[in-house]
Image 1 (cartoon, rainbow, N blue to C red):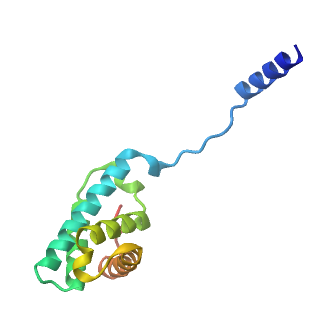
Image 2 (cartoon, rainbow, N blue to C red; image 1 turned 180 degrees about the vertical axis):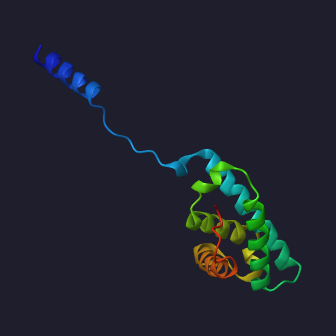
Image 3 (cartoon, rainbow, N blue to C red; image 1 turned 90 degrees about the horizontal axis):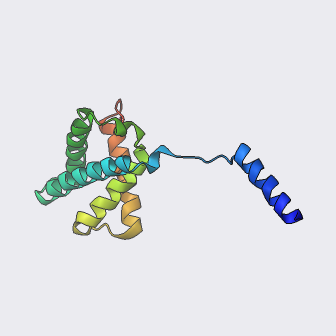
Length: 133
């Protein structure tokens, strides 16, 4: 009988004061889908530029500007939830998987190198813009 009353008291207590749960906006699937579309678009543009004989700097600047223009004119409200570092990481993974082998980038080292290179060129190319906003 004592266990029953103790269980009942706990049940009532947790019903009156439920535990707090935290939700993050980044877990929204529509944000992930938008981020995937952006990284796929960037990777396609970058890899095509490399295959067409552009230098890696020219290919990077061209892909950044073209992708930035697409994002700027997008009316998708989810773009404000994309973090630049998350997007840079996803872009790096996509590029290394799609065409990184053609210019010597493979594995985690290749992804890390491309991410830092991407962020460096991005800051120089579009200093007053935010890729995802």
